[in-house]
Image (cartoon, rainbow over all chains, first blue to last red; front, side, top):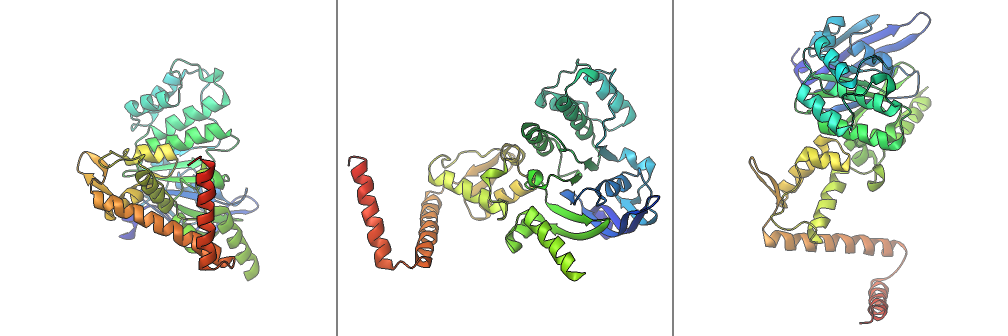
Amino acid sequence: MNKDTNMAATFEGVAKRYTTNWGLYNVDLAVPRGKITGIIGANGSGKSTLLKLAAGLLRPTRGSVCVNGAPADRCMSKAVAYLSEADSLYPFFTVDESIQFHSQHFGDVDLHKSAEMLDYMRLNPASLVGELSRGNRERLKLVLTLSRNAALILMDEPLANLDPLLKETLIKGVISFVDMAQQTVVMATNQVADVELLLERVALLNTGRLLATGDVEDIRSEDGQNLVGWMRAQYAARAGAV
Amino acid sequence: MNSEFDTSQPIYLQLQQRICRQIVRGELKPGDKLPAVRQMAAQVGVNPNTMQRVYAGLEQEGIVSVRRGEGSFVTEDAGRVAQLHEQLKDEHIAGFVADMGEMGFTADEIIAGVQTYIKTLNKGSGR
């Protein structure tokens, strides 16, 4: 338990079986507090499964998942802010009503912060959600997620299919509005090159198994590689070992 | 956003070098206040913890001084700034000489080449 105090989340011997295949297999991973960790790997490697387990939205078939030292389950969704890949906004709400509704559901929404973020994202509180452009829906999702004072923020593919300028806005939003002294971010992403200046640690998944973990600045100084180069090297080492 | 950095080299070192150059070029003057860590991180698009490390490293090297509750400031120690000038000069010369050496040029050829180049530069600018 002692080491758990430095860890925002831990996975011990975690396996998740879906009907016909293993989504994750024998994963041991500790996510340090106060950092931004990237869960990287190809499509279908288990990134989303790992995030859903941490959010308490899925239960492990084997092993244990702990968040802030307590087993992850649905009740814990209050301590975790989860940005899903899917869009769960209500079209009949205005932007402001969406935030009020979110605030009623989660007790930890900082309305001062959400107002600041709306301003930064140039979202009009009176706009109807159903009439927002796709880019603005993504902006609103980020506002809802980051306005919560949750200790753990989980983001599933936050940059998928976005144009370069919107990606930059969202990345700068994370930098500006996450309180690294109080919060931890885990981001599952395919867009490694887009977020490599944001990530401090990475965990590389390959067909449901944890292939490697690393500190991103150490990868640069010790291996002289960027993240894509490092991933390639890990896959090659794996292929060589088989 | 990434294009400003070599992503296969540590980002905190590249940021430290960038700030040092701004001081040497006079874009940042002694006593100038640096943006807050998070603001600077958002401007550049890097992790706030990386930027924290940049500031801490510069403070340790005496290039930046942190005043509690006020922020980080470029050092007003003229000796330290002069030293930084020399440091950057030495680093650039070392890199250049090493590159030239790798291509097989002797010390005399390098010096002669630099002198000739400077002469044509001065002629070009009408001096």
